[in-house]
Every structure is written in structure tokens, then in C-alpha cells.
Image 1 (cartoon, chains in turn green, cyan):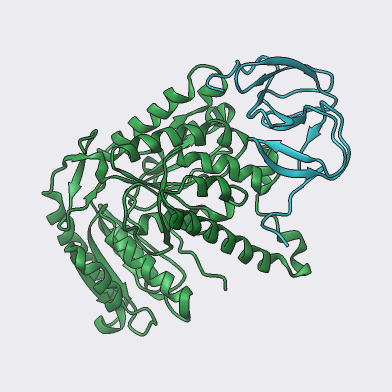
Image 2: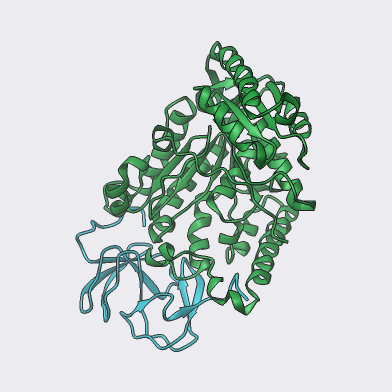
Length: 391
Length: 101
């Protein structure tokens, strides 16, 4: 399929990155500070500090392991330095082995092997500096938009999210998917009440059944968590800001939230920590927390995240551009520096939904070709956080 | 709903034929005559009986307790209490048990 083009970095395994950075990834929380110090010594590096990697079992540990490997595999990173402690349950060797098949530059530093944290910082900095120099000679080349995978996530929603920002993003998503690209919807806790509509958009009965099952399982998990009467005041799925913004129930939020997936057919439902096996519109089986959503999407291979926000949120992701879209003209006026697209122009009557949808699509292509987002310009990187399986 | 009216006009939007609430596109105060625009372009006036903040919903019909509230053509909850046409509908007078015990 011949579609629109963008300028990206072709990787050893054929995938295309939209950024050319070195990822410093700790296998366990104990090596997080060493990873951060290495990042601070290398201009074109990002680090992925997290509070997990040990004292976990079963599905919870598996999700941590697969997600960290997936982030390391993401094509926005030309090289990876794995930083381990040495005694953790998720070993640095396992993390490195998971990333190695991509063929990208890869080195491992283990604190207990090299001596102490200062020695580990020094060794890791040397590795990352060499990788940075090697990466510097790579040039962007023309790539087809079918190589792009975007993550869809809305945060700080109000009623304008469902009225304009999400439907406009849906138009952009449909345009990408129609040209062979991929788009990932997640936030299953915020799709409750839309499962019958989404299932009708499945490419076949199997995918329809997967959609219904995934949302039902998420709703049952939530019910178990709110059954205890001592949690009576902590059972609301939507936030005070959502309420202030005019959303009265999770179903109302969901009906607006699903609109960012456009009208395309769902081709696959896949598990958190995994990468999809198909291209097109995808459903990632994960929760509703902004950071957990985008982390799962980046681990699945998304090079860009598109993020509608009615209330306005500044957060970004390390090494992955996050395009902020608000449907609320008042929020845009207040938080311009944090927002890339003003979809509030539909509310004020200046533009049509279709025009803003096209504007978002053009922004995706520009950002894929190197334009930095507001979140990148301001150094926001707080979205990296791995979903903990609660049961 | 392709193109909305300007914010300085007292307008509200109905997103689906099945809906029994409208979404305020401007801050409304009790007694305002609001122009309600339906999906498809049909327009009519509703007088608000309470203040309705920007982005919030008001009743297009008289609601009885436990009547379903419809937006986007789907039920988003039910009424805890009665509500007159033109009244504010939000989580203080609407309930929805999905995702909870």
C-alpha cells in the first residue's frame, strides 16, 4: 500500500523509530538511580526508573518483565544500556536477552559485578556515550505511514473530550489505519458501557468475543476491589476533575472515550506487555491510568502517543512524543504551552471536526518526522509506569 | 454536530435522537432561554430552571425517579430523584452502578 510518507530512523530489524535515543533501563528499582545518573551524563539518553523488578510473582512479575523488554525493543531507541543490581528476581540477563533479537546496540552493567554504584555509573556512561556517537551518523529516511503505530489515551477528560477532541482524533486514527498503519485503544476501565458498540466493530466473531471478555474481566476486577465497605468512598472510577468537567458516570466518560478510535474495525485484542501480531486498529487489554496505558502502548511498539485532555495535563513519556489535544477552548487559553492542538476551535465554531481531524493527522506526520511536541520541549517524561496486576 | 455555534451565544447540543439531555456549550444561569441544537440541525428553545456550567447536562424532559438518562444515544445512568425539564443533571442526582459493586 502506498500512503503518505514521513522521515524516520530505520532499525536493524526493519522497524522504524521517530526518535534516535539511547534508553537506560534498570531491571529493578535498586538500580534506578544509577540508570538516572547515566542518563544525566549522556545528552541523547532517556532513563526508565520504576519501583518494581523484585519480590513479585506470577502474572505481576511477568507483566513487569515483558513491559521492560518491550520498552527496550521500541524502535525510538537506537541502543539500550540495561542496568541491573545482580540479585533481583527479574535478572538483567533476561531483560537483555529479550531486547537482543532487535539487533540494536545493547550493553549490560550489573552493579554488584562491577563493584559499586560509582563504578556502574562510569561503565554505563562509557557504553551510552559510545552508542550515542554510533547513533549520530544515522540519518532519517523516507518511510511509509504504514510503519507508524500510535497509542490513543485520554487523560483529564471533560465533556469536550467526548464532543470534539476524541472524535477529531478518531478521524486522524481512521486515516492512519486506512493507509496500513496501526492505532491502539486501551483504557478498558473507561470503556465500560461501550462493549456492545465496540464488539460490533470487530473484524470477526473471535475478536468481538475477545473485546466483550476483556471489558467484562476488567469490570469484574473493579467490582472485587470496591466490594469491601471500608472502600466505600474510594469506588469512583472517574475523578473529581471529570465530575467538575460535567461527566456524571463512567459510562458517559466511556462513550466519549471510545470515539478516539474512530470508525475502523478492530483487528486484534492483545495482552498488556505484548506486541500485537496484526496491523490496524488494536485493543490493548489494560487499565485506565494514563501512565500505565501509554507504557503498555510503548512496550507494544507505539512510536507516538496521541493524548486528548479536556482539563489539561502536561505529562509526557521518555523518548516517545506525546501529542496533546484539547477540546476545551478555555483550557487551551490557560495551558497553551502544554498543548499541541486546539480542538476547541470546533466548539467556538472556527473549524469543523473534519478540519481538526486533518490537523491532528498532519501533526502526527510532522512529529514522526522530527518536530518535537510541547511535552518534549518542556522535558515532561512522567508517564512511564508499569501496570501492576492487582489479583 | 460538525460545526458548533460561538461560545457567546446560549446554546446546547443534543448528540443523538434518543437523548433526553442536552450539553451546555456555555455557562447558563437559571431562567436562560437556551437554543438547543439537535444532531441533524433541528433547533428549539429550552428555559433552564437551574444554573448549568459549561459542558454540563440539563433535562430536555420531566424525569421521574429511576428514569434512564440518555446521551450519545446510550443510557449513561438513572435518576436518583425527579427532575423538571431545564434542570441540571449530574452525579448529585444521577447514579450508575457500572464498574462498582
